[in-house]
Length: 330
Figure 1: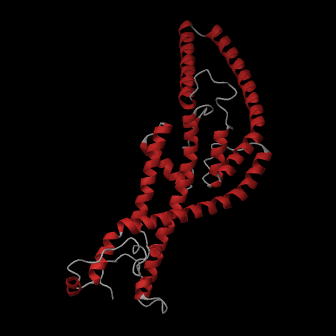
Figure 2: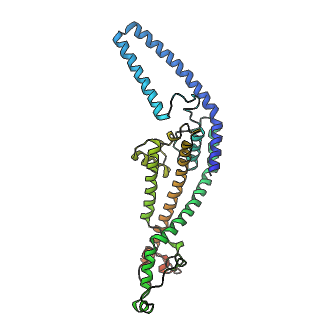
Figure 3: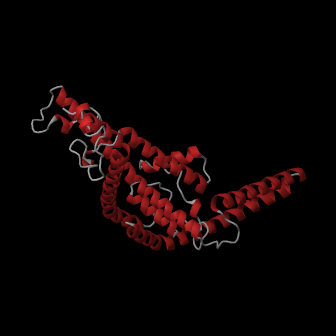
């Protein structure tokens, strides 16, 4: 997927670069002509009709406007007057192209970078038709691997107390006395293979899934607040909108790796941003699937208990959610 995204970035930059250069030149010529016409009209007006005080006031206003413009481009685009004019404010760079391909593949679609050529629009459609299904398959596979890891960790860490309590309930006082007052140890080989609590059937609590998603959003909020110079609320809002693939486009990453060429820190910021988006979507997909498993299991068990459905081939203990593991075995 990384190679596919990078290849897509290269294709889109190759298609849009020349047309963007043409549009920039046209815009520059139009701006120059408009500026000349404005300054000429302003000069003749001030020379013939304005007083010295009005002249000074108007000049001061125009200088303040220029000052705000310079400060704005320096702050928002890191322009320091040493950058090549042809590169510093380009829309189609490899970084923006890579971010564009990732937003296509993940269906986020911030909309801050869009193709303007007919060929670019056609390639976007074809690229999406191939890339989006591949991305969903990739995220599903990554989500399965992550789910297995979470189940394994939850089974080994959070459920050891449940296993110990269950084992204590399996032995009465006479049996414990015959063994010298000590229960047999729960070996590592037994963990995850018990009939009452196999790792493959462990169900992660919904609350834990929500905590994982919240922690990942908070982590992203802290990272982007530092990289993009946003406040924590705006950064958290951005990460939530991103991971849910809403993608309004009012906030989008970019200033952290503007002019990334030759700067390893900004290059890592670019790669980290794309990695966070892909990993976050896989995590959200995993958590939703895990929560769906538990909800489905509980609904089926409740329906079976009240007689709405029959599960003749499944014992009650097999269909119940694996939550009350410290209960006495039947």
